[in-house]
Amino acid sequence: MKRLGIYVAVPFCQTKCTYCNFHTGVVSAERFGPYVEAVCAEIQGYAAFHAAAGIAARDAGEVKEVDTVYFGGGTPSLLEASDLGKVLQAIQKTFQPGLREVTLEADPETVTEEKAAAWAAAGINRVSFGVQSFVDKELVAAGRMHRKDDIYRAVPILRAAGIANISFDLIAGLAWQTRASWEESLGALVKLEPEHVSVYLLEIDEGSRLGAEILQGGEKYSAGQVPAEDVMAEFYDVAREKLAAAGYGHYEISNWARPGKQSRHNLKYWRREEYLGFGAGAHSFFGGWRWANAHDAAEYVKALSGGAEVPGALAGKPVPLLLVAAPAVRGARLPAEQLEEITAEKALEEELFLGLRQLAGIDLERIEKQYGVTLASKFDPLIGAGLLKREGTVVRLAEERLSVSNEVFVELLK
Image (cartoon, rainbow, N blue to C red):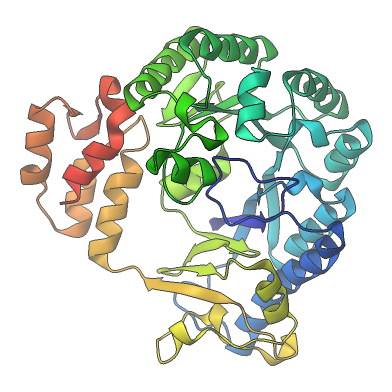
């Protein structure tokens, strides 16, 4: 039996962080309820679409047990626990349930004893905190709502509620960050002993207010105080050293975990296992297709209520089963705005760059046999340059080059 992951997008925040390039918005809490109802309709519509077509889609005939659910955002912890429970109930009624990991992304300041208890009662057993830093000056510059004291307050509340799997995110490269303040954040994190840690380098692009300001040479949002790229890379290497010394296993470029605490859901992405995404902007990989829902939350709700058509970008294209209308959903249509059938060539590319994100690397012999290709001409120069290492049939990124992994991927996919 194949196991399926489900991602639920909650694109709402209390405020927009300066570095954020996600499609999220600050909206009235009155919009949360209708959005949750739309997500539940999309989940329940999944079954209706299959029933309407006699389960004829490629690979859809196999029963799939859902073993992971991930509420991502945005800030999903803004939703009422009862609304999160509604979504989980819709999932368990629609799919064959076998939930082992249910993750909720949360901001530390949103945690209360009542919420934590209700989350646990609803079935949430893992919380991923957007900590980003333990230094208040950096948090203020980034536009974060919480302060370091909120982190110290929230963790014991979750533990007391029985949520024993906690993940922390840190960002290397925030404005005003120094080597000393970065080590301060790492030290505080280690003392709180989360089961899982993610470390991301600050992304500088036009998609965020901070990124656009840096690219324009401006000073707003403390843009002039953002560390240089080589300093960010140094911070990343410091994190690798400190986390290894604290007993965390480095299993993916940006992720570390205690033994047995790797993110089951995120591993599906890197291993190219199937998952379905529900909600505005959510992505799916299923039956040989990848698609994404429309990002605008209001348009998403309108589509699921039967008030919108499939976007024109899909007109005349073959679409997977889930993207056709089903009478059982009262004329509603799933609001997909991107669609791609994964060819063998595309699948091979994904095998390489997603597989190499994992510290375990890829089995080159298996991939060559499966896709009928020879990859020596691609890999040998990178191995010779010290960017990749080979041990038998396994190829992996050289650990000392992890901070510049994107450069390796660019060369590999040329």
